[in-house]
Length: 65
Image (cartoon, rainbow, N blue to C red):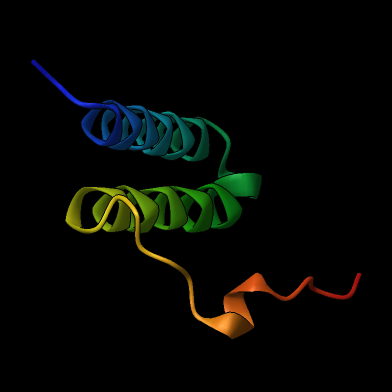
């Protein structure tokens, strides 16, 4: 039986594949979609490795827009 972290990682990886497919079908947004896919894959790895881990302080700060 899977736990919540495993399910979350699977959903993140599935979303990553979706972003990559969108990028393959739409070259103007391919770079952004690949960046999204990479971010989702990294978070999936983090969730699997340390489900209750915390982010570094810099990652918790809002970005200026």
